[in-house]
Image 1 (tube, rainbow, N blue to C red):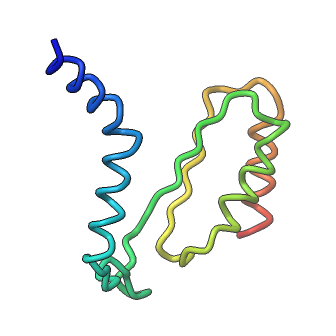
Image 2: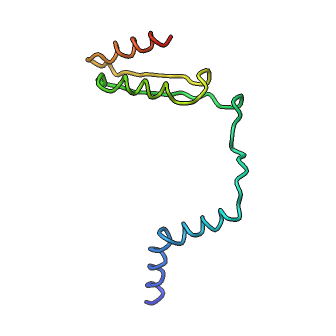
Image 3: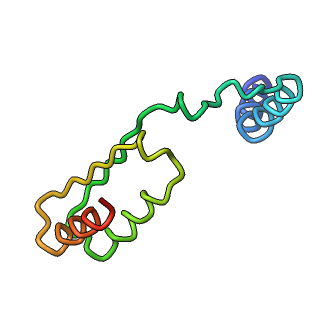
Length: 101
């Protein structure tokens, strides 16, 4: 019975204390040499996919947000998919695209 008790205590403490402490100890010995950094020429091409349905109140803010992100513009593809919105979402998206092209 004592073994079960201590196993349960360890199972409770592991995610709260033991695991974070072990990560901290490992981080002391392991130094990241920034091997995962890309140069601007090596950045992958990405796609922003925005799905909308009757989003006329927030779509302009969303479009401005994704356009303001710091990523090379020639490496980004923007896809706005509307599920047949019956408000002014289409007009807002078309106006915004027309103003930046």
